[in-house]
Length: 400
Image (cartoon, rainbow, N blue to C red; front, top):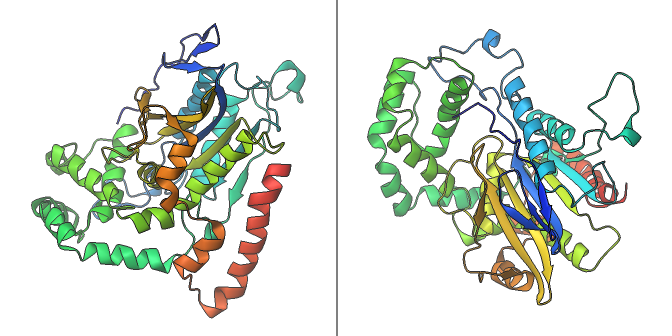
């Protein structure tokens, strides 16, 4: 993983309504009406050390385990600048609450990433100056969804139906055959770590620890050179993330709520509703991108989204109607345009809805379809958080 910042110093060129972004990918300002941006948080410390990890002490990770590092903060600040350069001329230079909204997963690294991102996206203009001590930063409001009810970004709300589907998937002959191809890799890693890995998702934490340590300049143990980086390990990670929402029902349960949110935002804009925003940011995780991209038929080939990966979902309007364009940047790589599988070259909004209608899961349906079960002792607390969390997230956040 390359921890060096990509250069984002290209100038914006505005000519006849076409904006050439920092990476040269053109945007038609005459047709653009809304952009929704979903990104993975910045570089962090490992979630936890693996057995035999030479960097398992707090002194190596003073910010704590699973927390955003200074490099991650810098990367997210640069991502905010990148968004500002790409969409300059579409939104005001200064923050305008009528144009913009931001929502974060309720995790420290996602919240800190969003704060750093917003600092790069909305540097204070002269009219925004509020303190002699802060010349390059202004406070920008955002919202979070409590973990017990988060079906949109992290997908941490309980869903026993999904859990059952996941267990069933791991028992299929298809999975066992595909997973069996990595038997030697499991044995090699287990012998050197003392851990008992047997499923691809279990290994993602281990591999990400290596990615993170390398990105921060630490020397990896010699034994890891055989399996990192390697084609075998890459294939295993790709396989792991291809399983996240493997079936139609899994897509509906875990990708459907965010898909519904995105479409609802587009519908508000199409109707010219006073609550409609021009730009909406979602600060999340690798799992957030995997679920929504797979649900939208954009996740081909399956892969581990790098830190700072970002998905742009643009709503445009032509004489023939509204249509969407999607762009993706994996980590610090170049931006690429994605095509929604099954949708025509010009993916009109109605065609997009028709294509994915069976995967759109509403909030009222999610509890029933998930058959959510909570312990008696937690029941009252979860219901209270759910009630106020939903009001806060779905009403207040659009009105303030």
